[in-house]
Length: 121
Image (tube, rainbow, N blue to C red):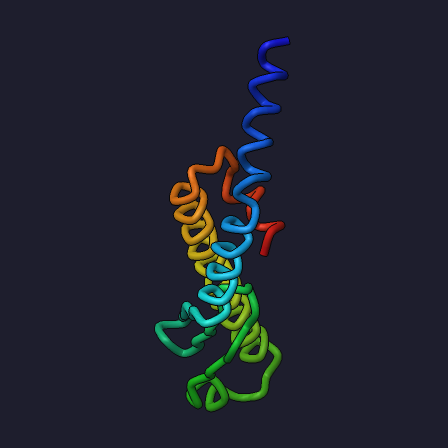
């Protein structure tokens, strides 16, 4: 019974701070949209840039990839390099976003995990 009252008090505190929480989450959203991370594969042959909103912003391919030829094996290698760099860029963007959200939660003294805060973005 006392745990329920304790949780109710925590919820009331969060509701009271909701405008401040929403404002801070909006700042995090804007910062995430403006942030970029890059990942490479194939020794720099492929570079993928992702935003903190988990969107691919650009893909750069070294011309050497195309010099290898048009055979299916070369195309498969190029596709694999793009896949690797894209996945790495998205993982880096997710880690960056989790860090931003975690920092905001700690700053706001919220008993909420970064994953739960993602819904506020």
